[in-house]
Image (tube, rainbow, N blue to C red):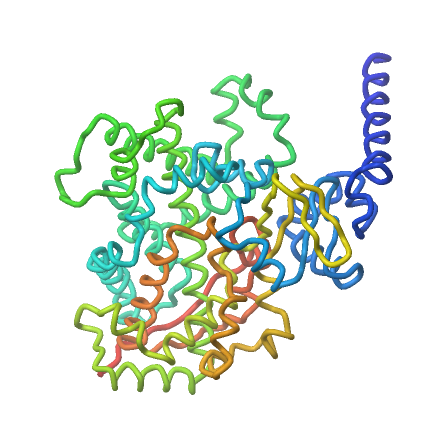
Length: 498
């Protein structure tokens, strides 16, 4: 007992001395911010883990008190200055990622979690061309096929008059689309008995668990020694679903490495393209392929599904927006029973304005994006930030900046039709910034354009009690999540005559 008391006392003394160092002797001690945040990660842990993804909102309040630069933990500063972030995060800057922040989302083998900018460039080169607009245009028939599967579910609900959680359908479709592109075979959640509810619960569990493990990584060795029978009994259903998904992905990865082809398709998937272009003999390639698969599916499901829900909600809230969109689609000769041409849809100004405003509202990545400049110190106004210090920005804080976007909490597509809108687009970053911008951006955009056009042309949509609070991001866990008791976008559908 005395030993345990002495050990605990030693740990507390060490933490106290460490906090004193961070507060008064650290190279960041001159950066403004709350002392509790500067002295320990416990402050951030409370808002990120105990309060479940609330630190982004706390950071916003810090900026209101301390100004455009804030020390948000002992090692990292956050800057709220859109012009500075555009300059500092530009593609020409050789910036590393902050490993502590990113590694929990994909492991060191995934491109998104790769710290070193040189290694990231080499890894991204193995699939970059495969995600170009030209190549993805060839994938549009598959997107339309998945949309038609979703439309069958919508048709059934339209015929019966039953309530439909459209958010759930969107997330299923997004997962089916991205998995069909990344894997030899789609996950086919739209054909599952629960319409992907288990998958969506597992996805949220993944983000919550990953966020917690960022601070509790020391528990991993302890978890590894728990007997499997006891460990399995401790797992929740979402956790079991996540393990099942990983095992499914492992099967696909092993087939690709062994050269097995899916007899049902002749096209090459993204993982097969990485396998073909792989050159680094020093890395664990199986782990890398698995982590790439996990990252693409996780990132491409939740964010795209959330964005589609937000856009649809505001369209059906405003009869004027609906009317303008349908008139524009009709004048362009777009009809729902034909394959939608993405090139034509992207030329429609009002549809593009609605989607752009939806991207601003939904934010894309929910939490901050830290980067590290190891080669030189960074000067921001009167503050010098030493080389090697993580500097982060948050897209949401820029998207809701009233100086850039008047009435930022009003859904106003017309703002993107004004002459000055071209200069505003540089402040829009739902897919991130610079050389680390989301590689699946064009796939997501094509899916959003085609889906919004299709559902507007085919259905009359009635909102059944959903309010903005049911969709708005409340928990920023790497991806934006609504409140826990949200039922998503609840609608009734009716087939249109024309």
